[in-house]
Length: 496
Ligand SMILES: Cc1cc2nc3c(=O)[nH]c(=O)nc-3n(C[C@H](O)[C@H](O)[C@H](O)COP(=O)(O)OP(=O)(O)OC[C@H]3O[C@@H](n4cnc5c(N)ncnc54)[C@H](O)[C@@H]3O)c2cc1C
Picture 1 (cartoon, protein in one colour):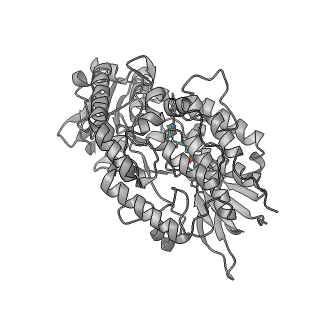
Picture 2 (picture 1 turned 90 degrees about the horizontal axis):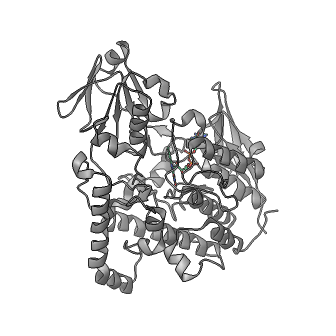
Picture 3 (picture 1 turned 90 degrees about the vertical axis):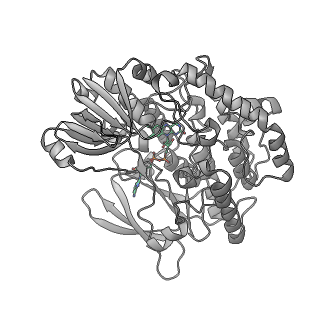
């Protein structure tokens, strides 16, 4: 018999909602703790820049139990994703479980040898209380702590009327009208904001980037939705994965020239389609080497705007500010009223005690997480959504369903601490030696190995159904309805 637990879910984004549903469905008492005033995490309106939309097509950015509305576009806009998440939370009875404007400021093991953790909870006025939980699901995402850069001269730049902001603070396009804007970074948010600045009537727009990277257009060759090429199992098989048998290695060796030709053909197509030669933005690294969660989708219009000069692209980074000017490391001066730093987020779990943080994160920043969900040396806790992907709603939902079974000792393949540690070492070794690109974001990314990762989670959960017919399975993207069936085929139980 599985004992009912008091469970804290930290964070009410995509992953926290998935975790709340999974633990609630198994009969546990769930409290969702969310520091902001609304649910949705990165999709919460006060954190979303104008024109934000998903990179994943809508059928790949959804929970298995709920499709996105039929009238949504293929790549829904931020407010649409937010509305979808609000509906999902309401329909699944999660809304009353959420405690808003409550921040987890720390946690420690419960006293008296009891299992679980005491969370230090801080309300919006800074008042703090301690509360005990038997199990903690950490769903704080990879986009919670802003990476903020400061450069010499910034105070004088601001004192003279300039503005410096993080990409997540850019919510009002009217503020850019008639202003000279410099965007630092080359992620999807950086190019989204640069294009939005042009459309909003900025007087000049410059984007400053360290290295160009390959980007995938929504339609490859202008015709084929990228999901039909980059999300399919047949494509995934071109990447040598972890734990390969000698036969799989031999197959990869034989196929190597064909795989190589496939990638060069894709590079040529993208170079032509995106005018990469003309704009000088053709990356140096072979495309296949860098495919992971950091590969951005092309912001429509970006390359055209660089090609016709509406956006100036300069390689380098900020060196210092002077009033009205940003100086770059290459010596260029860029006249600027507003500097927007699209330089991402800091990874981490700041409320975890140092002793446990050391067990979680290696010196080189790689996370020690079995299946990117749990660590045997961090008892009574697990991580949902840390297995980020090109379809994070699905990967978070599968992780949530895995985690509740792990917490309850109900996985069909419940691993021992020794098995988990052995697997963690194998994965770290593979990431460090064979596929450095898999080490991006501390190794917390499953792309492009979605199917391989999902296969493992489903097998661990004891899913009796795990595949569609071979044609659909190999040549079409992950199908949320099929995953609903796979989850339904796992052994069911309820805590009492
Ligand atoms: C602009 C943008 C577009 C994206 N598009 C895609 C896409 O198309 N496809 C895709 O797969 N992924 C995409 N992503 C990645 C995205 O992060 C994930 O898809 C997903 O939304 C992550 O959800 P999450 O719940 O794990 O994290 P988050 O959305 O970051 O939610 C974490 C929550 O935890 C809360 N929190 C953090 N710390 C604490 C604390 N100490 N106490 C209490 N609460 C706390 C935060 O307030 C937040 O609400 C995108 C990300 C961004 C920023």
